[in-house]
Image (cartoon, rainbow, N blue to C red; front, side, top):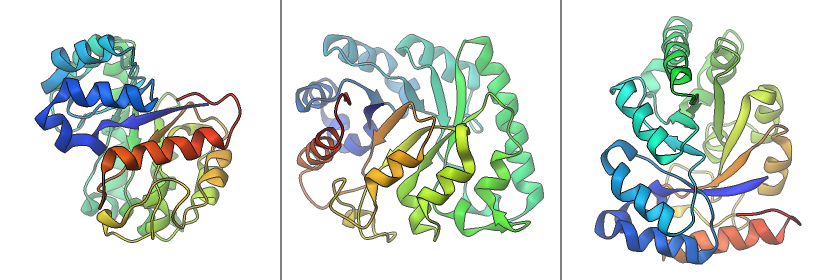
Amino acid sequence: MSYSLQLYTLRNAIQEDLAGTIRKVAEIGFTQVEPYNFVATAKELGAALRENGLTAPSGHAPLLSQDQDEIFAAAKELGITTVIDPFIPADRWQSAEDVQATAARLNEAAKKGAEYGIRVGYHNHQWELESIIEGRTALEYFADLLDPEVVLEVDTYWVAVGGQDPVDILGKLGNRVKFIHIKDGPLTTDTKAQLPAGQGKVAVLDVIAAAASLEVGVVEFDDYDGDIFEGISQSLDFLTASGEGIKA
């Protein structure tokens, strides 16, 4: 079990100073990151990661709306081995037909990713849990339509905001879940109210324990009403203090 940081958390700082921000991430104690929008920043980001001894086992990219070859080529350059589509709008999760179509497209993306030696996954928000299709959450319905090689990155905070118990959902999704997003807060859609891990309403350690095939736990804030570097540092301190032998 290891921890990573979703770089979207630091998007404002990255826009101002990518290299300096990556250096701060390393100084805080992270050894892994999860890039976003990495096609646009691959060269500069790659140099910053190498300079600071960081790796990127996973990354976010809009696989179903942008050039997949370009995405996979940039991922390979950065050493990203799992590319995760981070967002399919809520209106695409309201019917079985729409969910089936999305799953089919992601399965096709996974076949192309395999040509680059890269695995494909999907990351949820709350609407995949709020929508019920044939008696199950749309996320569970979706998971059963995916080819075996496609993985899930479960955003455990948005699962809870969507009205579901993340421990229960992780159990139902089983070995498909290789990554989770770890965040905390009051379980509302007010992203500025999010808190460092262990300071909100999410049973963070129970959630981590419920992900039986977890490869990486990814710390993320969608937003934060405070010093974001202090926030991610507090999250990492909580996580590493809670488990022996766990590395960042």
